[in-house]
Image 1 (cartoon, rainbow, N blue to C red):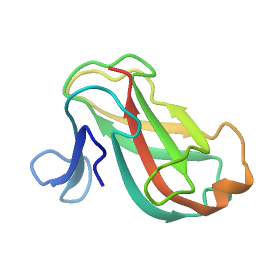
Image 2 (cartoon, rainbow, N blue to C red):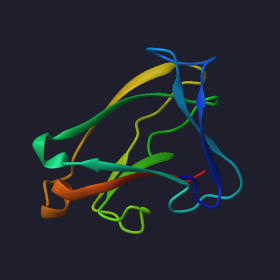
Image 3 (cartoon, rainbow, N blue to C red):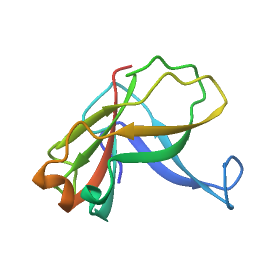
Length: 117
């Protein structure tokens, strides 16, 4: 689901594995959340979130943040994780270790994305 300054779509032209990627387009000013995606996830069964990411411009560490929420609309944050620096146009596999395992992590209902740029 898109927040106030973003859009989510599938992309079958640029992808890392299989046949499509999830394309997150950020437009306008930063906000919280820019984008969120509803999930049903027991994040307490692991200690990290791993995914591939590609940016169309170089980004410094922390420019993009990912958070877990117990709200289906990403209205709250139970974990706020900084994405490391990204090179322009390159796929990067990112592993973000949870800050701690709290009770809410076992009932994650959405993953949100926000930016500081």
